[in-house]
Image (cartoon, rainbow, N blue to C red; front, side):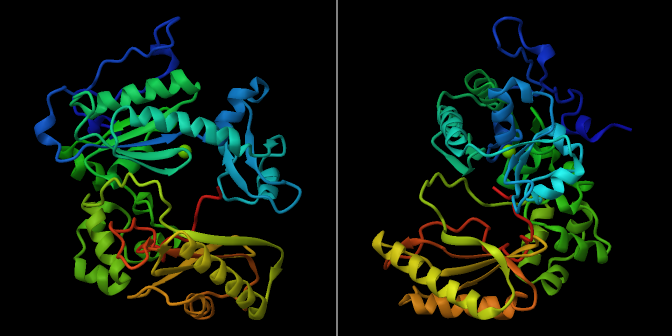
Length: 411
Ligand SMILES: [Mg+2]
């Protein structure tokens, strides 16, 4: 039986880049591409997803040799209400992960070294990484400080093989920042993202068009970005464990069970994702949020907060000549469960009160606020566009999938 990794590139298993195959002295990595160079005809689109490995923690380890090889947790106060932003791979072995309360991380690993985040530094590194990506294509969509998609179907210098491009990017990032990144190469964004996560850290995974079905066959549904523990549980209850099984269920059944999310699940399970890399830097959502000193247990103070946020958002956007139609309410309960609920208007809101009214309805009807203590409340407006015009591009799946996002990274 061959392993999944071998199946990805039959006859030429994907190479894992390690120190051992870096050329001595030069810092360069010697590498022989595992797939042939002339594959242009079989790639409808060539998408690369780059994801820095344990980014914040890796930067801290790079800059402080005493932290190398140690469980490092970047985040808030482990003796207060801090949250883990990033855990080093050594810390992850103890079960520590992003968005976990720092106090819990401390209990899991008392010897962990807690470091406060240095965002300015991470931002500087991120700018360098993004500029490396822009050397290859202008179609770069940065998702966060440490993550971006590239469409390299047309490469600036005419390199055809996307695997070679991904490798060059990884080498360059390492040379410039002394940090490793993982790369996923695939014909669309969904698969590229799953691929980058497949062999972390310092991974490079390629899913060629003819490998998609095999790759998805045994991939657990939870690996689909956007499927959180709740959706996973619902799928498992229906006897659906893998993308292969999900693809075998009819779209109408999934729509019946999950609404419009069902259609998305059905398409995704078949490896279909038509989204394009959107190289826009303007934010797609204008939002504000607050973590409270003390959990809020009743609705009136939360309503007052929403009023305040709605006015701030409406006025802020108007000043910029922009507006949005999707109202998003974010609630984190005392137990750290995080949910977002959204509603999209068919028109621009006329004033901040209209935003407030919708936000209030979402809060009161679609969340457990008032019944369950609330630790954080946020309000955002998405589907942003210039006032008087519809948004030019389809929004990223944030809003469509908002029901699914029960867990988010605590960065
Ligand atoms: Mg990362």
